[in-house]
Length: 467
Image 1 (tube, one colour):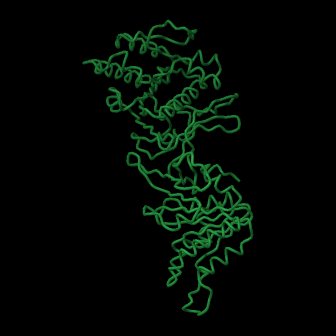
Image 2 (cartoon, rainbow, N blue to C red; image 1 turned 90 degrees about the vertical axis):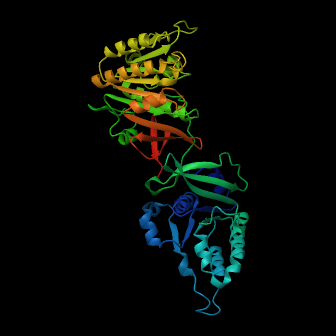
Image 3 (cartoon, rainbow, N blue to C red; image 1 turned 180 degrees about the vertical axis):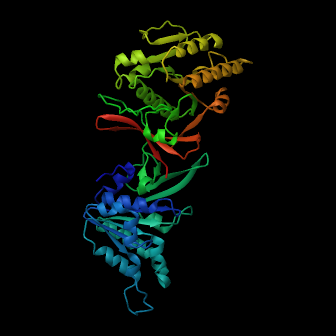
C-alpha cells in the first residue's frame, strides 16, 4: 500500500499511531473527497470507516472503483440514515450522540472520514448550539481512542472557526491559474507536532486519484541505467517522452523550428532535462545531434549527462557541440567540440549551416539562445536584425532538409519575441511550488508537471496533467 500519493508532512502526521484529527477544506470540486479517500486507503488499518452524506455507498464505489480493491476493505456508511429527528420519535438519541456513539463502537485502531462536516451538522436542526460540543467530543474521542479522524468541510476563506482550533491539522485545497490554465494546490495551514518543510504542494486528480506533485529534482545517477528509446517516425522526431509526443501530435515535426521558453528559476532545470532526453533518444537511434549549450553549460556537462546512457563511440560520432569563445582551455578538449569566435554573426552561423548541411538528416539541433546575447552584442543597433536574419536562414535550411531545431529562450532576451513568432511549436516552462510546469502555447495545451522518473533500472521524463 503506497503512501507516495500524499505529501510527506501528511504521512508523518497520520503515521504517529496516537490518533490525529485532520480538517480538509476547500470549495466544491477542489478534490477534498479524493484526498480523504486516498488518506483512508493509505492509513485505514483493518478498521476504515467512511461516513458519507454526499453520495450513496454504491455510487461512491461506482465513481471510484479502486476502492473495491482496497485491502482491507473500506466500510462506507450513509451517514444520513443514522439520524431520525426527535420530532418524529420523541426521546430518541440526539444526532450528536448518535454520531459519537457510532464512532465509539468502531474497533481500534481506526481511521474515520466524515464527509462532509456541514452536511452532518446541518441535520442537528434545533440542536445547532451543540455543533461545537460535537466537534470537541469527536476530536477528543480521536485522541483518547488513538484513531485518525478526517473531517471534510466546504467552509473556507473565512476567519478561523472553532473547529480549526480543535483539530490537530488543517489542509486547504485551492484552484489557481497559470496563463489562463487551471492548476490545483494543497496548503498545509497547520499540522500539530509535525514540521512543515513545504507549506504548499501542487496536485493532480488524474485517473480519479489524488496525487501530489513532488518538487522537481535533478537526479544524480549513481548506477548504470537504461533509457527506453521512443522511435522517431518519417514525419516526426520524438522528444524521448511519449506523453510529450502525444500533446505535440507525434513529437517535433521534421522541418520544424521549436521554442521552449524558461524563466530564471528552476524551470531552466526542466529545459535541460528535456534537451538531455531528446539528445539521448536521437543518439541511440543513430541520428546526428548539434548542441550550442545554454549559459553555464559546455561539452563537459553534456558528456557527463549523456554518457551514462549512450556509448562513448556513439557520443563522439553523433554528438557535436559548438562553443563560443577561444579554443584555449585549462582542461582537455573533446574532439567533438567546435569553437566559434563570437565576433561575426555571419561567419559563425555560416560555419554552423555548412556543418549541418553535410550531415545525414534528420539532424536535431539544440540552441541555448542566452549564449548569443553577449558575444554578438545583440543590444547594439542592427545586431538583433542580423541575428534574426541568420536564424531565419537556419529555419529555411531546416525545413528543406527535414531537420529539427529546438531553441531555449528566456523572456528577458532580445531574441525571445522574434523567435516565438517564427516558431512552429512554442512551449513554456514555469515554476509552481518547487515543481516544473510545462504547457503549450502553440499548440495550446493544459498544464503538465515535468519530472524525472527512475524505476527499476530505467530512467525517463514523466508528464502528469493537472486535472
